[in-house]
Length: 419
Image 1 (cartoon, rainbow, N blue to C red):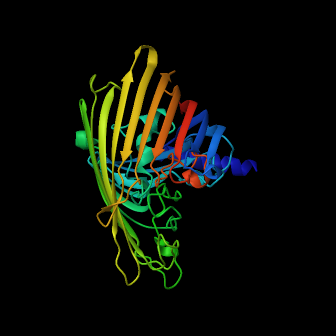
Image 2 (cartoon, rainbow, N blue to C red; image 1 turned 135 degrees about the vertical axis):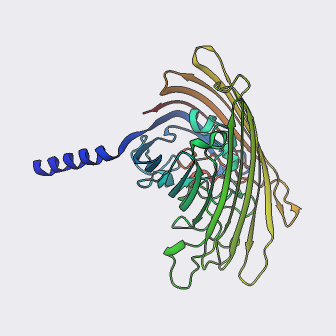
Image 3 (tube, rainbow, N blue to C red; image 1 turned 180 degrees about the vertical axis):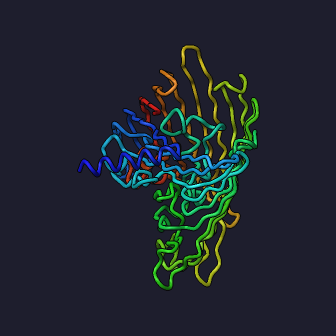
């Protein structure tokens, strides 16, 4: 036993001498209440669920090696953890896909310099956060903007698997973080059990909505399609008081021998396309947390049955974010989102949209720790069932599968520590 420990210590010392290894992460917990009521059917209401909930804790392992000449090799593994119950289930007692295994949130291996990097693996690609919205990613357990962006039609993924990405490095200045990517649909390719007209779908391993009948990548059986692909790009800009972004993503499943009843028939091909444009202004200077931003999303989905034709379903989402710093380490923030009624083949589907609102107060305790209070609500129209984002946050089964017409409300008092 002692020899094994000595050998392990020697191996660790040798590895550390040639590469920099860091361990970090985030612990985030919230005491609060969640409910979803008002659908018109009391048997489907979820009333007053008080809980002590994990809201995005994770452990991050990073490795970096200087190869000389400005070139470096690196790897990252971000693994979600549930410190509320010590398992991989969220508040709905359903699987929280971001805490299932190593690198469950993000993991990649790459090589590059200050101008460009090539990254391979599971990575974030379509995110409402960043400089344009720090509320949900940094300060709270989520926000009204993210709730609407990940619901209903959705894009294929916000965190894609089996991916190759080319990313602009820090040497590109204001454009750092811009990227172009493509990937193959892997084991996250399950069928959608969401409602056909605007319902929120079960959350997939990729952190997005399950993609209506998509295939299972290379894990399919004989006779099934492994042609599923997705691709996209992100243009980021941050210079002085101005921030901006443009995102675009398309995907196609290829014909699949699985389906989900009337929503996606057996043999259907599912095509998605989406784009997002956003702009923000730091109104008290480049280093100030004070910001206002607006984002606009347009997205579509076409389900084409085998030997048939499909109609395109479309929607758009408008999102606003505002944050203001008070003295003494206090911050105030607010978010708003509006999802339009969907269109099917150009015809408006009445009462399939929603509005979402969020307000919050943050108290900064140190550079690593802050406390917060937040309140969020989603007002669904009669045929819509947008739920609050995150498998570890919503208390309804399947990470937010509430009844159409329900209104979600939640408040939480939380503490976040970054280590």
